[in-house]
Length: 92
Picture 1: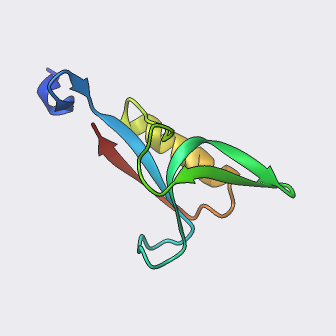
Picture 2: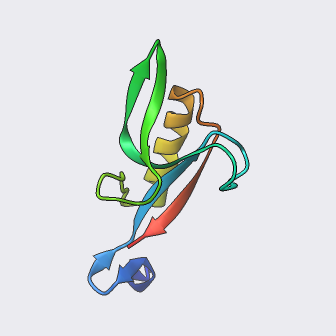
């Protein structure tokens, strides 16, 4: 049986998941990182780059499940060669 209370961020709100992207394998604030993926990419000279923000904003792409976010992050890493690592974070 599914315990729905574990999926609520706050009363009446479902938990959402966002993708944090990095250009290095270490998630260190002093290193070169992207940030939270906005759900779109752009192309420069044949290279794809993610649109991102340093913090979670209204533009940040939010997923309804962790599995969907993980799948999207894996596909994004294949598409954008400068994305080396990612992590999934849960938000309200």
